[in-house]
Length: 198
Image (cartoon, rainbow, N blue to C red; front, side, top):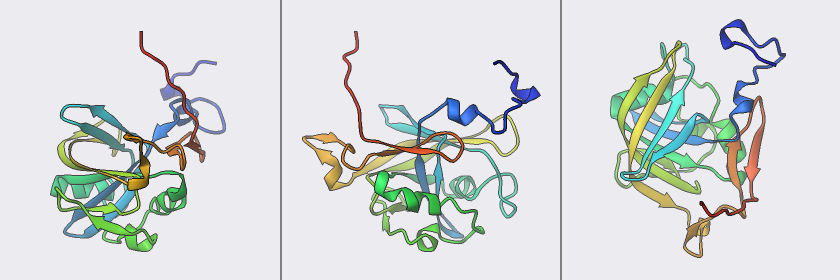
């Protein structure tokens, strides 16, 4: 099968996000004049080691945030955000925080998620996250298409949950790395293998 995206795929469901999977989930927390916000994004990844940098992309808009979503709008205002990394047991809370709530509604409170303060930035983080990356935004890029934005940031502080550091390594084998697949599918990865690079 071959198709050109502009011509459509002819399938009952778009295969694109199932092709590029699994994708790590950046659970993005922000703070602005309207309050605190929390939302998951599966267009997310680490982009550099030194200094440590991350990116996430937002791909649609809300009626009360013309042309974007709460996370991007709040980062445009504060230039700050935190990437929370959820493990398997937090999957229902991650999903609950994806609800399209009105701007100014605090997803931490709405989904019953405990918040904690960041150390290097004025922003909330998920207290129970396996890890949290405090970030200062370096760029917000408008991408091709309506309401598509990429946020780039430098990591200024890193939190690791105590039980996730085993023998000096960040390790989620016990509870699993939560990731997005295609359609409505997610995965929890607990099985890995090592390979030496040539």
